[in-house]
Length: 339
Image (cartoon, rainbow, N blue to C red; front, side, top):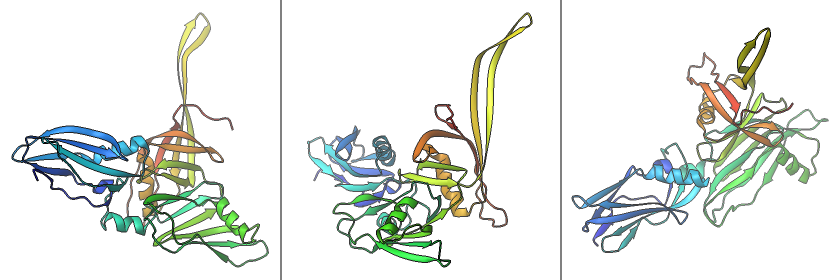
């Protein structure tokens, strides 16, 4: 064998865990390296062999850029090497899940042990859309259910209803989206003949993954959706204070006693200060502040793109000082909405 790919790959990995470089050993003077994402070539380059070896770098950035462009959270990644004698060698098909953060326990344990989010719970309004995502292994049997905690107008004590979802999620490795909004859980209760219930908490479990959803009857000051660590849409309800400031920039011309204005521009900025946050909540919200795709809810189920700027993010594990994040946002098209 005249060419060898010396770097090993796991069959399932996070993009952050991809090797920093791939070592290729060859007896031929030149090799051609190609990278495909879901069977589409996204990279091709020739490498000249020096000292019987060549190194391919920036694998992670190539794969992540392609997945971002294609709006993928999971993809099939293949690295092929064709040597000067036209023999082709391959890494094999590798399932990659998009992630900015590296795993300490290994990708499989992380993906099978938690939902595709970095938080363990969420506080939502009753009208907020919400989706949970998880990686599903083919033909995997597990215990999938949710416990809905609620009360009725005529009953003071908290009641619980358990809803099961079946043992198998998929025949292929894929990411499963599960709607987890207040309206959906009300519909699940209705299927059991329970109506007019007020839901307070839902414990959601898929296999070993656990997530707690708390519902607040109060309206949040802001609701945002953004692409998080796994390139999937996250929803966050912020309970705090928002201050709107209007900046007017214009030029004036004076002719006699008359004043005329021209080149007038109006920019409205909204300054947000969150309510006190826990350390985990603050760490999660830093993904909102750094996300490339952010939208804000302007009506039930309607979100408009926004841009976040003027960020003040200081996260401390000092329990004596509550954590508050501050940032400023504007609509991407600089247009406000009618009330």
